[in-house]
Each structure stands twice: as structure tokens, then as C-alpha cells.
Amino acid sequence: MGTRDRPRANIILVESDAPDDSMYTAVITAAGLPGVSAVSNSWGIDGERPDEAVLDSAFTTPSGHQGVTFLASTGDNGAPGGYPAYSPNVVAVGGTTLD
Image 1 (cartoon, rainbow, N blue to C red):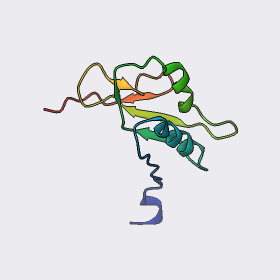
Image 2: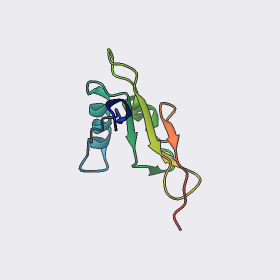
Image 3: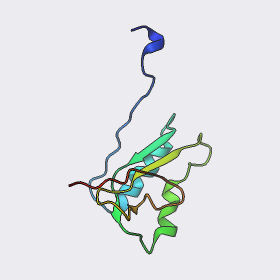
């Protein structure tokens, strides 16, 4: 395999300890890292949230940073999906049902 044939993707893993505001902090941290162009999430919360308008701001490109695309799983329970896939700032991915 020559140099031209090698994948050029770099993956940085950013984790959070708890399913609370620290998950949003992890998203913001990941988006702000140098060279990051996509942040992928798989922590769907069932249904929509009453505080979504405030939380959606976590899924925006940081000021002065290259554009960041935010992706989120829609969940493992079929339709309807979950948050943050419902955010208008996120590309919803998936829609599976585990049997």
C-alpha cells in the first residue's frame, strides 16, 4: 500500500462520565479541537426535550474555527428517534430497531 492509498482520517475520542451537562461539554470540547471537522455522537435521549433551544447551541461551530458537522444517532428503538438527532444543528444518522 503506497502513501497515497492510506486513509487520512484521524479520530480523537472525547468521553464524558455521565449523561448530563458534561456530555454537552464533551461535544463543545471536541468541536473546538484543532483540525476537527466532524463530531459524531451516539447518546440519543428518547423523544424531544423542553430545553432543546438552549442545548442546541452545543452543536455549533466554535467562533474562528473551520466548519464542524455534527452527527448523532437517532437511537436503537426505531421511530421516533431521539435527541440530539432532533436538533436542527445535527445530521441525524441511523434509525435502527434492535430485535
